[in-house]
Amino acid sequence: MAIPYYRRNLYVLWFAVFLVSASWTQVIPFLPLFLAELGVEENLEFWSGLAVSAHFVTGMIMQPIWGKIGDRYGRKPMLVRAGLSLSLIYFLTSLSTQPWHVVVARLANGALTGFIPMSISLIGTNTPPPFSARYVASVQTASAIGTIVGPVLGGTLAAVFGVRGSLRVSSALVFISALLAILFVQERRKPAASAPTTLAADFRTALRMPVMLVALFSSLVGQMASMSTQTVLVLKVESMVGPESSALWSGVILSLPGVAFAMSATRWVAQLERRSVYAVLAGAFVGTGVGYVLAGLTGSIWVFVLLFFAASVFASAFRPLAAAMITTGVEADFRGRAFGMQTSAATLGGFLGPLFAGFVADHFGRSAVFVAMGFILLASPLLVRRPALALGGVGAAAGRTETAGEGAAGVTGGPEAGKIAAGTTGGRLEAGRGGGGVAGGESEAVAGKE
Image (tube, rainbow, N blue to C red; front, side, top):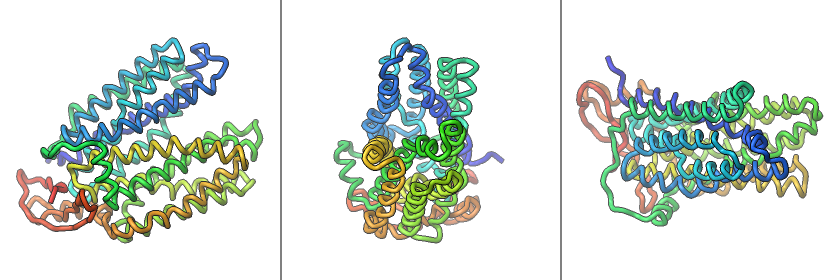
């Protein structure tokens, strides 16, 4: 018997997102080497920083726009557009002969990106509610695994074929991802026609919804924490083990967040079945904050590794919890915009994190970055308490197993799984249960607009 289309979407997009994520992380660490190959000797750090940050600037602006277009015309066209665009950009980057060529390509990269957010949005809107959030967390896990594999693959390819060759392999991987989406991904639940709105109106709508306030805040602070600590991590490690061993230790430690995410992302989503959004999110903030504070204060490399890994396990909660909240608590016809805004919030956090780390490190030392960021995380449950408590158990459906979900909406025409909708004007969440049969012997009970 053929597998349900939504499960095939998961398998295909899991692999496609893994390839896209791996291609991204096999390129970024080696941009300084590529710029050096182009003849940049003076101000190499400046050009490297400019090339990396260029993506974040345009990405932060464009992600909500692509999300809005996806809500109007469909998520599959947008993820295919992003995949083909990124493939072309990586190839054109490999043809660069001047450093400004790389910067322009990175600006275009940020402006045209969106494969992973649109993949998540498509999964979230075309999967039955009882296990849609877990499917989303699974795709995010694929992205995390890609970030682990990417640098190893990029280093190997750069050593064998050079950085230009590595960029062309990245181009091919992303093209394969887009091709897989074109051939095998189905978007059966497409956006319903709705009155056109402005981007400013969409942001006002989102900021009136408790679920979006919590998702945006946790995404911004979580990414800011990750980028601020990673900015000074190598120097912190060097101060503990010396310059001779710092490269090896830093490489191992930098892989820990990806390992922690792959191990724990779906487990964090499952917590929503038994506990409220606020309880789970507050635990993640406190656990990450305590881990960072203690890691900043220790002078032992082994203790630092254990504390940083423990903090990374707690920090792994922010992305899947935000995605689960959006998937189960935002109407389907607004979900693409919601994921675009979440991506922009995370991008803003990634932009602010290094700036925060630089300021704190310059004035108080590198270890102070971990301590200061830890205290911000410890204070975060208080800042997000009111909107998070308003959500109650919005993510309860996220923790259910697929078997239970299919049992609730099975081939015999049983009742559909409960639907959760978020009023886009007041942000009030209401849960309801509907009934209906199944056409063609397959459950296609996806969250609908009430």
